[in-house]
Image 1 (tube, rainbow, N blue to C red):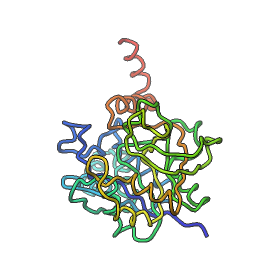
Image 2: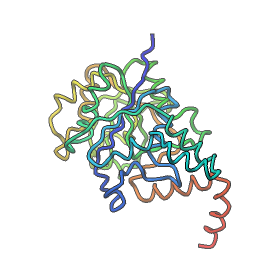
Image 3: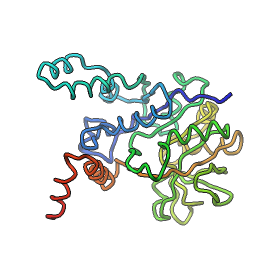
Length: 296
């Protein structure tokens, strides 16, 4: 019988330093792509994979994320009274999207620690993890049949071990990512391949490969036990990659190459690019934007 993935952990407790000064008071996950917050793109992606429960790992000042997915009866009534039923329907849909829970990360001790904070809610079930600043909007359906989380869930159910989403990056960029150690380059780009270890943000000359972890994972619950015993690593934090390396040597860890559009919205260039790409998808914005860009 296939193991079902019912929960996703989304760590959103970070300080959002790449988005300052905007993120001084507003969570970076609320950064909008035109008029849709980054976090909504992520939630809709995981819902498409059949995941039912969203677990936010939060910190002080992050209440807006959970509030966003709540109902707003007064605002909806106000809009309907003024004949703005389409907008009211949109807000009503957001409030009905998913079941949201949260747990507090009281100290900024790293991504591994943030995931570990979710154990009381996740329990002994397999679960997904999505990082809050990586989005894969469905803008390029010709290049992939399924959203990334759905691909990973299907791979997990097929191979029966934890699996991580990766992309190949230029060698000069390895210092920005967790990088995989592998025995051999995968022969097929759409098939899971075995991971033998991970390294957190290696310098290019020390990178064991160019396969970068890009913020999508499905884990067996044993990862919690490894994170509990993981000492502080790079940056004085408990690194998720260190726990993943322990998985490699025991239960096993596989990787799956992700295809299609990916945006790191914490990077100003990719954030602007996401805005442009989304605007060009919308009939009411596409032509005016094209006309404006031609004048530059």
